[in-house]
Image (tube, rainbow over all chains, first blue to last red; front, top):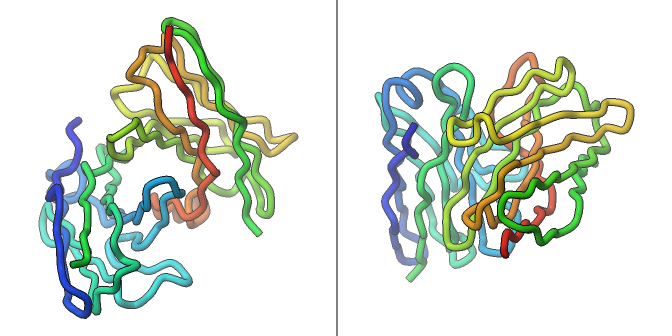
Length: 110
Length: 123
């Protein structure tokens, strides 16, 4: 059971949009609409940003959006802000009983 | 408000076992899955498993099967994660986290997190 594949890093300038991809298999992302995304600032507790592929928990900015196509999920952040600089992790339900995280992506706001 | 309060940091030796507790408050404990997630130094988040507090049923990540035990005590709204045969690479911050939606419609998204418990494995 390998981790989902994410780019190690992405970057963007304030105001721009960026997309982080998360590639899995037909046993995880491809089979379930249970993909979530987390923002994790070092030293702090992870924060759920997206669940069930594209839903936002209460309080999460609508600048964050999620989508899925086949075995790949994506997180898009529009109107990039300095405070968005963080590590981002995708996570998917898998094999009918477990969850699996991606390796994480470091977002740098230039 | 939903709160998850974990036990404190521990230093332990290779080969030993450690148990982390997670006391829940502010919601109906038996109605939401609880996840356990860890992050080793310089590494990413790693899902260890989850427990259905109502039934006690649990599932684990393949890496942890045979080495992790997850239990709960519904009388005190507390979940426990025990990891056995510890190695140095088990040094990590361990989190409990509550699913965002209830057991009947699980989102598999962890919407509420404990503060984390640092477990250090060192001889």
